[in-house]
Image (cartoon, rainbow, N blue to C red):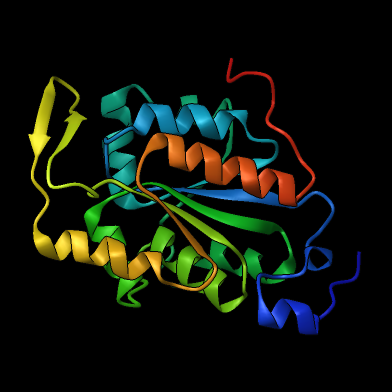
Length: 206
């Protein structure tokens, strides 16, 4: 399908669906957070046509939760953060990805996205998606004064600082961005995006 420039409607809102290839994918970005990591991967596995984009920190953290690169590749096409210029990001310009998801997103990633810094693969994907009017869904980890999360060995309590909570609120106001504060909100945002795309969840993540 020949790629057209965004229509007037797309310029005013999210990108026109006609601008994407018929087999366009979700671009699912993983950062270095272990918070709801396994649950997030399970949601990604239920989506039709999804590729994983890993930050360098994600590559360090994922094996701690049982997800080696080889295991990930059994379920996804995996793109790694090994290019200073973010070469994989260029695929956003060619209609290959209709949605960018960052889940889970560390407070560091949220801060960078909220302040226009794009020096990792996930933050670069988010920034370039915004410039292309492509919807982004961000599952922020630090959204409450107290967060209970599962480390590789035990459950721990984290107390996000005011600046981290402020960054979440700042990011929630960005164009073309849906900010999820819980796994349920993430699933709801994905369900809504699937409906917009006239797609559906697959039956299971098995």
